[in-house]
Amino acid sequence: MTDPQIVLAERVQQALASAFGPEHADADPLIRPSQFADFQANVAMSLAKRLRRAPREVAEAIAAQLQDFPGTVEVSGPGFLNIRLDDSWIATGASRMLQDPRSGVGTTTPPQRVVIDYSAPNAAKEMHVGHLRTTIVGDSLARTLEHLGNTVIRQNHLGDWGTPFGMLIEHLLDIGEDAAVAQLEAGQGTEYYQAARVKFDSDPDFKQRSRQRVTTLQSGDPETMRLWHVFMDATIRYFDKIYAMLGVTLTDADIAGESMYNHMLDKTCDDLQAMDVAVLSEGALCVFPPGFTGSDDKPLPLIIRKTDGAYGYGTTDMAAVRHRVEDLKADRILYVVGADQALHFRMVFAAARQAGWLPDSVSAEHIQIGMMLGKDGRRFKTRSGESVKLMDLLTEAVDRAKTAIADRGYDEATRDEIAHDVGMGAVKYADLSISHDSEYIFDFDRMLGFSGNTGPYMQYATARIRSIFRKGGFDPETASSPITLGESAERGLALQLLGFGALVEQVAALAEPHRLCAYLFETASLFSTFYEECPVLKEGVDPATRDSRLALCALTLRVLETGLELLGVPVPDRM
Image 1 (spheres, rainbow, N blue to C red):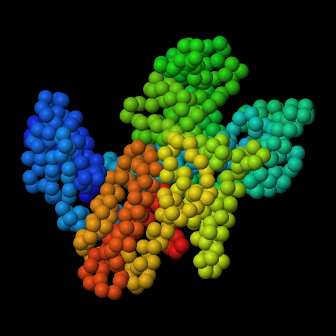
Image 2: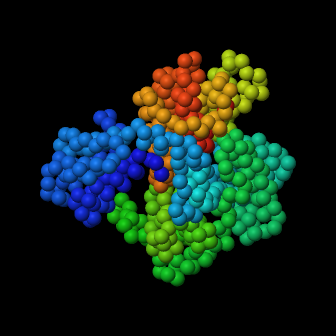
Image 3: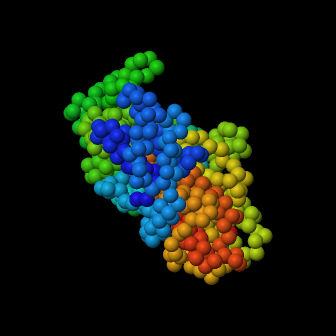
């Protein structure tokens, strides 16, 4: 690991132990990038009170223990340590990183089994923009955690069960299986649902048939189950078209819908009741996890079985936690779900721990997804007030990207391929560059821009580096010359690249892909400065300098492409 901040943290901690005793070796060195040096360590400020000494005196004692340091250490102000690394140390680290096939990214030790619950559209309706963020964020986390050597188990918790399926199956019978399948595969699930709902509300006979069909569905009647599979298979085929367009890694093998837990629900309730974790309250079976109260200060219930005997989300989610821990052997479970479900998941996790189904050794985290807003600051909808279909939004992104590159002289097939990558990259990067729990405004004009922190800008940065190698007749895969640093722009870029491995580990630990976006944008910006100030192929550049800069270009390209791959953003060779 050549990440400067990690190396510096270790060295400062050793200095702390030497200066003040081993009991202080675990203090956080508080190392941050600095405008006054490469990094600044602020540990003396926090440690001074414990030592009952002046902060500057503490800082000077630390600096005295850093004599064989690969750089310079100066005490400034009331007790800050300003640290500047030697150019040779940075150059050696960058050269080693270039030789490393993983570009400085390590692996999790020991590797974990991580279950990620994401996407989870409702099969009774069309996939809309509300499913975009959970799908994109969840997929990026899956890619990142896998890249670090963990076993990732994707779980697409489809809404594929419940009372609406009675009327959906009856509507399928009314219009015919072929017509129903064609409509569902065409992405008209919302229209299908609405037509069934209108009949349910206006036709007493249809309502009665629908309710009876719910009963036969829940009892496992073979013909009803066959019809349910006809409906679900057509719906999933449409979902798969969207996943393919987005380039996410979910497959049909990852589907773990609500129906999967049906056979577990009776036992879930019986076991909770037998442990006295669940109790009857006003006819419903409830868990009252400690610490949760309503506005009336009364204990808040997690309903496990309703008064009419029906099961709900609480039952399914409790069964899912148990399955993921006991059967999937999860060490960590991530629920990439809307922020509005925060209370529900806190209660589910608390209830599962109360039941002993979620031991302290297993981490369960709700990765909260903020709402997507329109330019007016309200929930993103069509002009008629309906949810925007996800396929319509993605298609528009590609169409707009095609217009943006129309004058670049590509043949139609190449233009279509680049437009797809740019459109999907723009949508995905715009989402991932914002903290997942924040609301964000969906704005095609901004996200498709070729400047600023956007997907197209990042894609252009990689394409520009590849163009350098094409122009010079070199292969970035074989660039392996030692990196030397003669200019400040070279040094700044190389120092930035050294932080890649630690950054990827941080993204995985915190489940925050926006940190990777920020790092990649800063890297691309530093490369832009390098490109302007440090000629690579220009006549007059000596061969050793050219080869060093080509090596630095190759390392930058690999870091950018690896990072974008972890985000799930496609990288076209040309723009």
